[in-house]
Image (tube, rainbow, N blue to C red; front, side):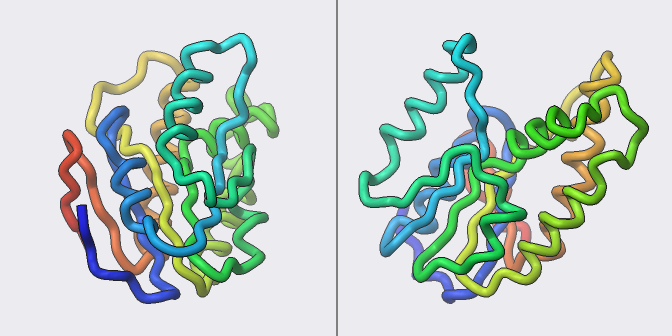
Length: 180
């Protein structure tokens, strides 16, 4: 998938469902030049399925990309990068923040400072940035409080990130559609 080069300071949000092709599309947006890859997942050694997903992502990435594992983009984006920065993905970052603050059963708003810090870091970032995030609002209403909390938080965060970004794409069945 060939695309014209994006401006150096352009911020792009890539949304999509599980296994939609959003990560592969995001990677294609930064395929040339120096890339800093902020991998937000914090793997659980006992979760072999998740480990296999991480391994598939690693195998697909070029070996010369600089990878920051377990990255917190709210912190990492305080520092520029001479090439592009790719954040993959906001859903695993959000889960890690909910875990870190023991917020799954806490009152709503417990992680608001973390969300505010991320949105501010994205809005202030002046280098090429591509952010991958899940779209979970197209399905059923989750039966559990934790499921509803995640859905609500990621939905609100995605709206804020879309406003902070210069362009946004929705990927469905491997097909990107430009939203903005």
